[in-house]
Image (cartoon, rainbow, N blue to C red; front, side):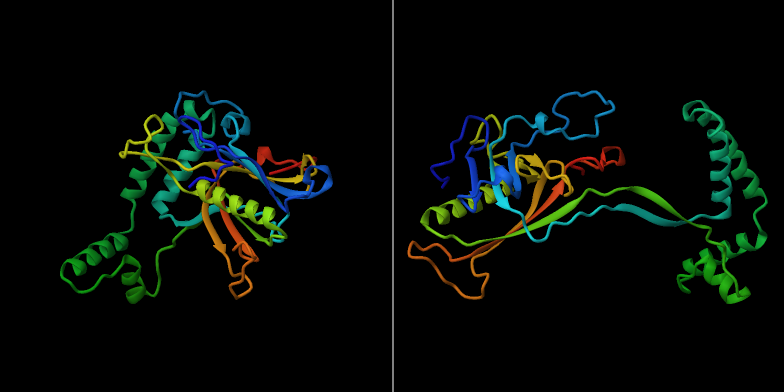
Length: 305
């Protein structure tokens, strides 16, 4: 059941205003804290969009009106992680020569203008290298194939050379960039209610994080349409210093909740207040950014990604 503080509008998820823990702290005045602002998910390709200089940037203003926000104290595990995907690749002499020829041909002018000549020169190089391929390599390939078909083992060309000549083919290993990685981050909180009102707010905070993690039943236009479910909400996680973004802590683009864990016995024993509320609750939330981060977006003069 949705708490009474949450109100739903047609075709959208419930709104709830603002919740905070501790309940009576004036975070916006002077303190460091983290703000979670919730939005309905907007499909990135629901309408045709033009690619421009800012196409890579996820603007919070484009997400529409927020469904509510939760303010929590600054957690102890505030970290920043950046990564990229690199992979080593072995290139034969034939491939290395063709790639070198392609790069030389395409680099002389704009890529579009030079690509035709680059492909032709790379093809010519492949033909020349193939014509000049060592007889030993051809023989090793033939032998490897024959042994495999005869079920004498799964030998490779390198196995043949190593066992007969004490050498292997030069792998010509290069480490190549495969692409960026989206950032993932996890925040942990421990909430200990000091009174019944704060215990109620903690229950509401937990409920809304659950609601934002799970999909909603039915299609956007028909809640009874069992053929579809609606994508969960997304969250703008912002580290704040008073009313401004924190200038020293890395910020994140709008993110999805990928994992949500609670413990109602963080101290190893079940204990409750007179109203039945656990005396302490821990919450572990894992997020994944929805947009890639580029070096162009980094800044050292203010709040930075």
